[in-house]
Each structure stands twice: as C-alpha cells, then as structure tokens.
Length: 118
Image 1: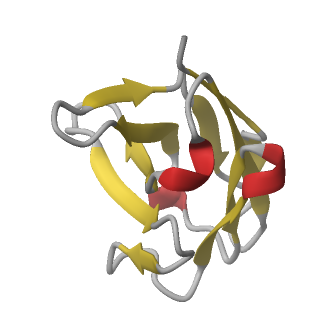
Image 2 (image 1 turned 180 degrees about the vertical axis):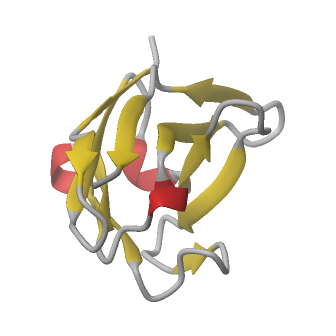
C-alpha cells in the first residue's frame, strides 16, 4: 500500500524558512521521480518542484532560487527546503508520486499547510 505523509508546515513570517518532509512507503522510492505541488483557495493545484531518481531537479519559475527539493533514498524521504518565503507561497503543499511504468498510478499525500504572514 503506497503512502505519502507530509510534515513540516506551519506559520512563518515573510523572509523566513521552512523545511517540508514527505515520507514514502509501499513502493520502490529510489526508482521514481517525486514532486511537490501546492494549492491555495480558489486556485488550481500547481506544480512546484520535481526530483528524478538520479537526483536531477526542476522548479517552477516562481520558486527558483528560493526552494530546494532533495531526497534521501536511504530514508525513503523527500524534502522541500523553503527559504526567503513570500506571502504568495502560502498554501497546502502536497507530495506526489507516479508509480509504475506501463500503467502508472498516481498518489498524493494528505498535504501540509504553509502560511507566510506577518
């Protein structure tokens, strides 16, 4: 059974930092790319960052230079280091995995709330 469990969200002032975690289980974590998405009320869920199985990364333009995605395959865990946070970074952050090759299945975590406000 695939499970993705996010943690690390909270309230932070503009310019502050947070580190989100996504603990994965039930599949060969090191084999697959992983992604972070976020969603704010009234908006569609948007892609934030990706990390491939080889560690290569990609970011949405809005977060480049401020957010960093990393993975620890020994711990089946993905992280999102968030620096220089802005109010527009506020939202629920979700961990996402696409598991399988010929007929992939898509999994989401429950989300963790990030609020950037003074």
